[in-house]
Image (tube, rainbow, N blue to C red; front, side, top):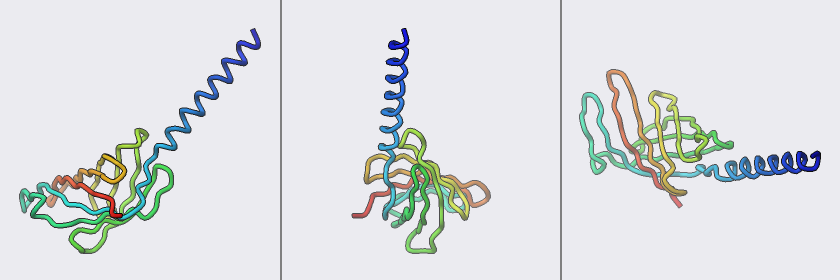
Length: 135
């Protein structure tokens, strides 16, 4: 009886370590320079297609596990800081831009991220950004 209980306990611990280890290993490394374009709708200016918006740059300068931070720049203008988290599925991103607004995103591949930016208020809007890692 004791041997059976000991075996089950060891097996459960090994399974827990393997499961936890694999999810930690699957956390994507987002550090780097990303560039892309966006499209969306803003109150007051209306709809803007991707070919009308120009380039945006996302620089993720630091990452610790599932937490990350960096700067975002539109069309070479002033940069805006942000911080974010990678959800436990290792695909979904949540970001808070320090000036205003929030992003919810998805890691589509090691080199592609899609973000949905939402901002409320008088100048609010909704935008879709697609970023590709610069190599």
